[in-house]
Image (tube, helix red, strand yellow):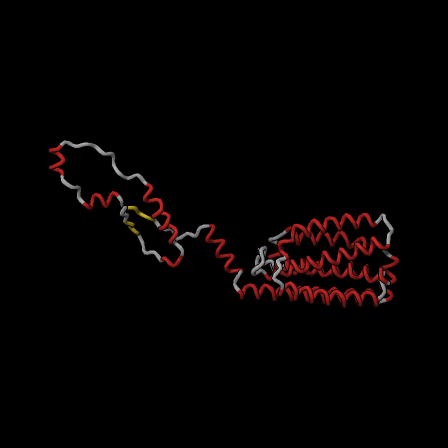
Amino acid sequence: MKMDLEISEPIDFSSGDQHLIRKAAIKGPNLNLQPPKSTPSPGVQEAQGSPHPKATDRAHTYVVQISDEPTPADSSTVTTTAFSDDAVRRAFIVKVFLLLSAQLLVTATIISMFIFWKGLKTWVRSNPWFTYALFPAFFVVLIILACCGNLRRQVPANYILLGFFTLLQGLLLGTISVFYNAEEVLWATAATTLVTLALTIFALQTKWDFTLLNGMLFVFLFVLVIYGILLIFIRSYWLHVLYAGLGTVLFSMYLVMDVQLMVGGRHHHSDLDPEEYVFAALNIYLDIINLFLFILQLIGLGR
């Protein structure tokens, strides 16, 4: 079947509009465009002769209108391509690690004040209300950062919230550290640093995709929370050791998964937006802090 296409304006076929032409070509042969047949009389048939070729060709002429507006599929493809660009991804990773380094530095400074300043250490132990007062503010800021996606993308609101959250987290860790010896806190800090560096290198080099374990790790975390609540009423040394060990393993896997989410590339789930550098830094920071707390608990139980 012969088909002519009349184009009303020039088309750049390198811009991805070929699927419109293919769609018209696929639908064309399926259309029943032949007029109903009638049996003319012999005299009329001889006088009529063969139909004019132009009339036949015009019956099979189609007009394809090309639109310059991008489709939703094209828009998503452009966004994904922009984020998968090496320069964009590299800038995103640099922002995350800079924010993470600043957070860890502020946290380490605050903890050092609590464990080496004897007057502050004594005051915190004699005033437990200070620790309880920090928890509501801590969770309010955490919920805002986790749920308000538009707010954590706005500058400087995202930096202010992240700084306030880091300050509250450092104060909470400081109030917890006063119940341990300075030597235990330093050993836990050194162990957390070595584990974090090793797991980060492992996450960047391994071919295993830990992003597929997101659902399983969430279930594991839920079970660990229930286990921790039960340990409030159960005084058992070995159950506490098991709890600290499981927590260390869980947040080690979370750290590997969050690093792979940030790096993206070949991993199955890597749907972070380029503007979500604050959210990515917050996830990795919480993984490291929880890892530090469980390692500190293990060291305290071991001594």
